[in-house]
Length: 181
Image (tube, rainbow, N blue to C red):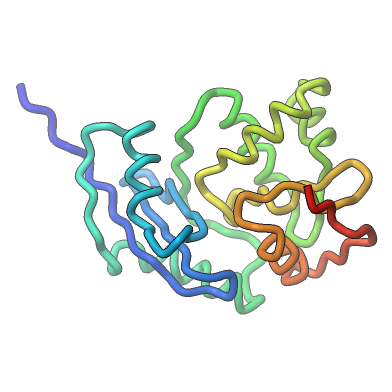
């Protein structure tokens, strides 16, 4: 018996926060990340090899267009809620955190502590931070909406300038200077 390889379609898009790489399975968007060092395929390959072995990767702008259109609408300020299907690949704990992030409304923020409380693990603040850092679907799973308990803009895999831009786009203005650590 030969198993058919699942096809993962991917493409890139220009955005106000730089080049984004996105990929989707038949179940929905599974990867959306900021391009690092102009090599979008390397990060995607590493992620795929970790979570989805035995897949066929296909560059396909047509099949990723519905996701790109929602991202364009978001960056234009026309979309506050994403209604695209997503396929989360991660540990059970990570998925619990990422699902909790999707409950943070547009233009609002939560602290890592509040996210930990939201998943019923109030002492798991550092673990929530670790899960945030591993979020494979930036922006749509809004890890940029998580801040320090003192209101500071801390830690963002996409870069602090991008975090500030996304929060500003959504109308959130931080009252505290961000932490450079």
